Image (tube, rainbow, N blue to C red; front, top):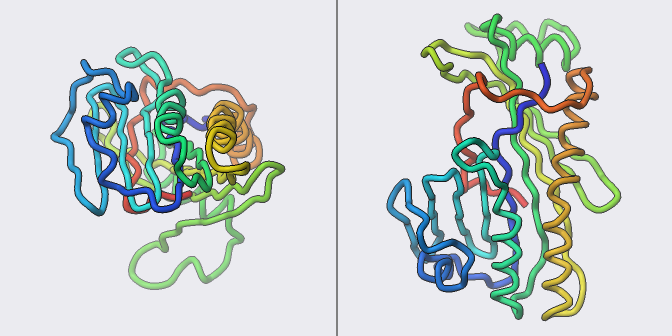
Length: 246
């Protein structure tokens, strides 16, 4: 089984960016979001942050000094990847913002349909060295792994977690969730040149996702880096905006 990408988010960080700036009217009148898109829940906008979620699988959130555009991987309901264009339009709309960095965060999982302890065994038998430290207390140990890699254009942070998901027929499915964060610093003079650099960073999203898939498939799973079918794979819970990583 190879990695199944489920969600991609693009985060833009800028100094003194107010979270309350991100509201439905701003998104609509700036042509960042089409006016006919429907919400899947009421937008929430406060001085500390905002969350605007649409029924096509796109979610836009903000925190102090950063905004995130997230999208569930394209499907029959939403066949196009859109958030890279939306993020670029956001930067164009605010050309004088003090942009600091762009984060591209792919998130995917590997399910173990035939083994309810598959994720646990993957972590504790394949990634960790065996030892008595694994057997302590009243239940099996749980693990969350954080790794950092230095790449040519920026830093890659990788989180690996065990999860229990609900399958299509209601059964519990063991899975390992891989969450990547590629951090690309923004350079250039303030204004048009810096906005252009932001857009160049955003356009790295395809190669970034490819690098993420290659790392997980070839180095962790030992399989060819080929697209995985997502038709029968359960969805992991959406990423948590309060833990928005850049």
